[in-house]
Image (cartoon, rainbow, N blue to C red; front, side, top):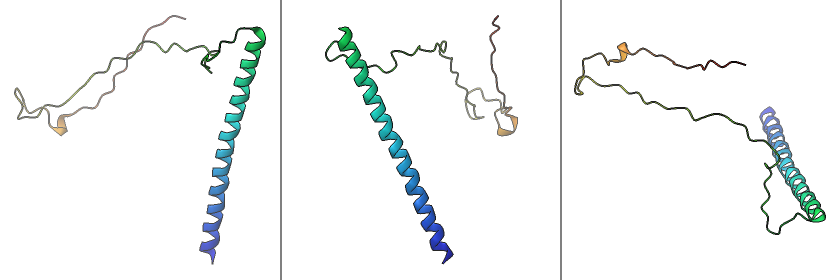
Length: 107
């Protein structure tokens, strides 16, 4: 039956993929553990190791400055029944727009 061989092949492919992903996770954890162990051993040899010192894997990386947070604005529609409604808030009168502000920066 051709349907059985296709489902069997899909099952085997899924199992192989899951095995590969789980193996990658285990190998990565072993690499990180060995890296941490090397850092601790080096610090002990240099005399700079403090017991119970938390390990920060991002310590060697420079933090990227992404600038200040953007301002968020809310917009909503008023219905005709609302106070001050003039009937211009119908779906047919809605105009979609996108606004973006560019800062002029010199190199």
